[in-house]
Image (cartoon, rainbow, N blue to C red; front, side, top):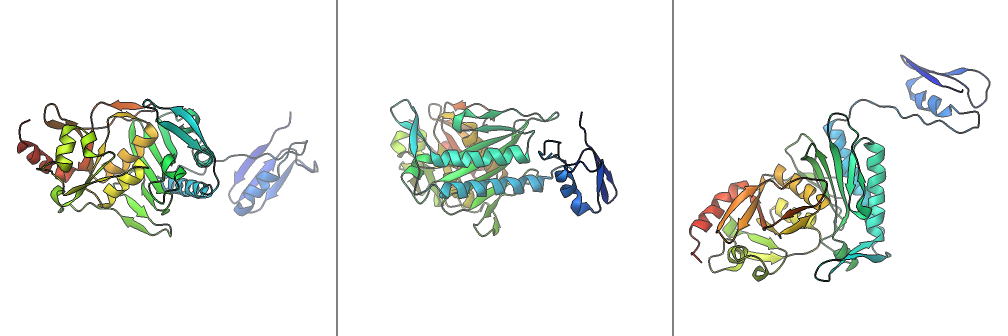
Length: 349
C-alpha cells in the first residue's frame, strides 16, 4: 500500500512517500511559500496528482461576509452574460393559470453559487430554488445552511427589464438568519450584512460601501407605500391605508419583479412600507428579506382586517415553504406608533 506522510517543521515541510520520479522516499520544501508546491508534486505511481485539502484556521464573520458578497457578484456576472441570449422553459403551471418559468440564466447563476458554497463551506447545508436542491448540514455543533435564489425576478429578466432583477443569498444558523446579500443584476449593487454585525451596507459596482440608516424623523404620512397589486385587490385595511380618504401614506406605488430589489427601496428610504401578500413563501425569498430588514430595525406586522387590529410577528425560518394567511406590512419599528394611532382613529366599518 502506498502512503504519504506530511510533517510541518517550523518553516519547512517534509513529504514522505513515493514521488512521481520514484527516486527517493522524501523531499524538502525549504520555505513556507513552497509548501503547496511540495504537496501538489506528490503523486501516486500512476502519475495522478494528490490534492490535499488543509484547514487554515476558523473563518471569521468578516471572511464569511466577504465570501458571500463575492458569490453574489459572480452570480451577477453569470446572469448578465445571459441577458441577450437565453432559453426559457415552463417549470410548472400555477393555480390560476400563470406559469413558473426557468431560464438558462437561473441555471447558470445557481451553478456558480453551488460550486462556490460547496468549495468554501463544505460542511454547510444549501437550499436552492432550481431542481429543489437541498444539501444537509454536517457541522457537529450548529445547523448552518444557505438559501440561494439564483435569479429573483425571472419574468422581469425574460421581459428584458432594466430593473427588478436580483440574485439573493442568505445564511441561517440554528433557525436565525445571520447574514444576507441581495444583488441588483442591472445596477450591480449589492446590499449586504455579515454575521455578528448590526450594520447593512449598500455596495456600488465600484466597491464603494455606504452604510444604510433609516431616517426616523420622516413620518409615514410624508412617504409612499409599495404594493404588488392595486389597493382594491388587497384587504380592506390595506386599501384604506394606501388609498382611502383617511389614508396613512401620502401615495402608493405598484411594483413587480424581484422581491429583494423592491425591498431594497424600503431599506434605502425610497418608500416607507412594503406589503407582502398572503400565501406560500419559499426560504430563498424570505430569508434574505428577513435578515436585512431586521438588521435595519424593520418589523413585520400582520394585519387583521376583520378585527381591525394588527400584531408584530417573526416570520418563521424553515428549509421548506411557509404559509402566511394574512398580509404583512413591513415598516420601521419607530413608525409602529403611527399605525396604532391611525387604527384608533379609523372609522368603524
